[in-house]
Length: 111
Image (cartoon, rainbow, N blue to C red; front, side, top):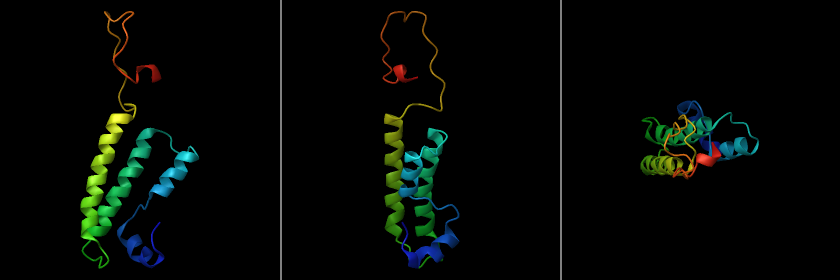
């Protein structure tokens, strides 16, 4: 949540504000249509931070927040890649020699 004194400057720089509270509320209310939309909103949080804190007219900018946001974005991407289902990709084709063989894919039973 943004401090009320910063709202007027922030709204002039950031066109699509979103924060973790909004993402969490939308998740709890099941308002996302798919995982891709969740990922886009989280990316938007980082992009908004970079945009706000690197904008030349923003006298309240904190330049170190840009590097923190980029680091957190990279961490988020790594964790997403590691823990989320590959929902944007079709499942792999079944192998003809794999009958009765257990899959090495930990997400195979969830598809």
